[in-house]
Image 1 (cartoon, helix red, strand yellow):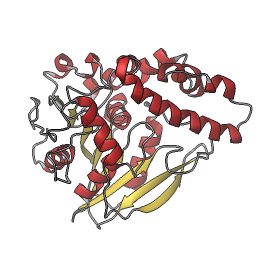
Image 2 (cartoon, rainbow, N blue to C red; image 1 turned 120 degrees about the vertical axis):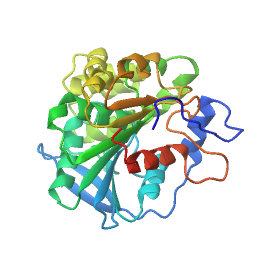
Image 3 (tube, rainbow, N blue to C red; image 1 turned 135 degrees about the vertical axis):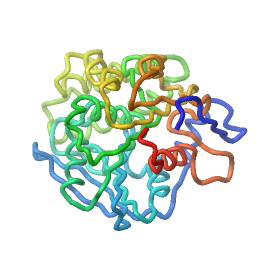
Length: 323
């Protein structure tokens, strides 16, 4: 798969990055997926909900969703449907609090919570059903995937052969700033409403842990990360959180063959999310930046149920090329 621009043809009426982001997010429906749910316990007495599609395959694809997403979002289910083929099993896991039930512990999920991804991967390996495992992530889940592969690259299990990620905010700080400006505020406000609702749910379990009046007054995602995400997960502030967890810190250390697909017209991504120079001579990681696609969009021309992201992932992960 070349690192140069992929050719993606969105429908004519989806003529800019915002429409290519919003229309699939709101209107896409994927049918024919029958998950089998499994709940696994975490070492800190919490739980993760895993949704499986079994085909008695010896290959497994593990999918990590985006911010305030789940295994039931259209972009996840479209990928599940694409890989719901002979020889393949698919596992779409839900982060803490994202599977339909609020999690037990005070902590939530966040962009750097690779301990949970590691637990899911180890659980799949321990089943002894698979010869090879592939990782796929969207947005926050893409950042999580790349951080997992790079932070302790020498400890990544050899059974993991490749990874492909889409719409990744590699530069978390730059992307947070991007989402706080102009028309992009519509995205951050949508996320913020969902996050505040989740905090209110968590406050019923931990009534002394949150100042709900303070939460109600939060105006933006960076402010939320300052007040909630960072202190709850051991970071000094939002900037410290972004700097420690952004995948941009870890991509040069990745040894697992990986493909990053970030559309140039993605309204969520800052300039730092296109690290051409850092990856120019990288032996394992490639960056492709198609001009179109939006954020977790990648819709094909009208009438095609399979999106470009799904075709790219299928071709890359089935390729015999090590890269």
